[in-house]
Image (cartoon, rainbow, N blue to C red; front, side, top):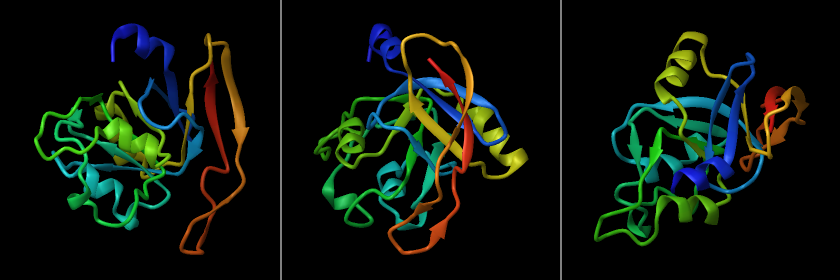
Length: 174
């Protein structure tokens, strides 16, 4: 993705404590909320996304480059992706003979919003210091005008457990 495309796909991740991380959208173009957690694996992003234990969570990858080997049906942990969102420093195009599709294509197909260009080191330190956070993610608008409070109702996940996630968060209106 070139600079112009990144600029046009501005998106923001806002934590419940008011901290905002700016990046650009690389997944499904939709607003979402969940619990922010981090994963220190250097590989295995497909297994993480398709692991049911990550349902309702935004997974922050600490490895700087994600997407190198793409997605293939043999490496799925389950029938679909379960994560509520995916955050990374940089998304790459796949260069692996086993790849059936790119990570970006898979995120869009599974309706998972994702952000790249985020300082995942700073975000991981914030999560480690403050504990898991309730984030919200939104694709950008045309220009940054200020901060507003946005509320979401509690969300019911597929296993029937009612989770009060992302009741309110801050986002930058662009």
